[in-house]
Image 1 (tube, helix red, strand yellow):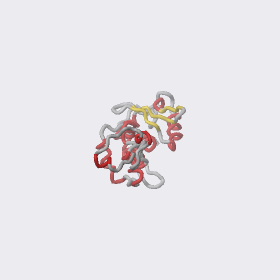
Image 2 (spheres, one colour):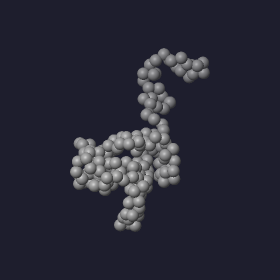
Image 3 (cartoon, rainbow, N blue to C red):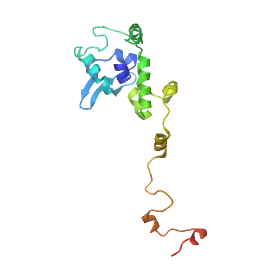
Image 4 (spheres, rainbow, N blue to C red):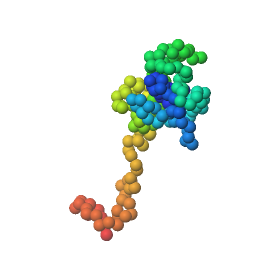
Length: 178
C-alpha cells in the first residue's frame, strides 16, 4: 500500500510512524523523513488502506511490523520476498515504486512534480523505466510543445495590428491600395 500508493523506498517504510500518515481535507499525505524528506500525496485508491494500517498502531509506533525495536532495509526486503500475493508475485518495494513512477509518467504528470514527490534528485533515475512508457499521441505532444496559442493566428493581422502605421517593404507597397 505504501509502495504503490506513495512510492516509499524500503528505508522510508522502515521508519514510518503513525503520525507520519496525515489525513486532511484533500486526501492522505505521508511525511517522509530521512535522506529525501518530503510530503507525499497517497493515490486515492490506496488512501483507505494506508490510513487503516497507520491507525491500527498506537501513537508514536512504527507502522511497518509494529512492536519491533529495530529493522533495517535488508530485513524489510527479506520479509517482502517471503510474501506472495494471490497472483503469485512476490512483494518488492523497488518494483512497487517503479510501477508508481511509470503510472504517473504515462498519465502525463510533469516530471518535476514526480521528482519532487518521489524524492528523486536526478532525472537519470528515470532512464531505466523509459522502455515501459507508453508512446504519447501526436496531438497531445503538439499541445505540450507548441505552447499557448498566440492572440493572432494566420495570415491576416488582427484589427489592432491593421490600424497601426506599419512600415512595409517596397514590394509590399505595390500590393496595398489606399
